[in-house]
Image (cartoon, rainbow, N blue to C red):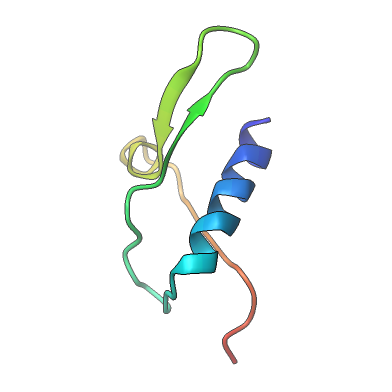
Length: 61
């Protein structure tokens, strides 16, 4: 569920933004739940936890 939600949010953001290699993204946030209470998550939080985040969408040849 988390991966699907992140993929959807990434797709929505990429429709309105154009990024290049090594650009810094704005802080995308979403509510996440695995059957329990909803938890607010954000892209910057994942990076702060030491997780690598790679967002790719299409080809800008």
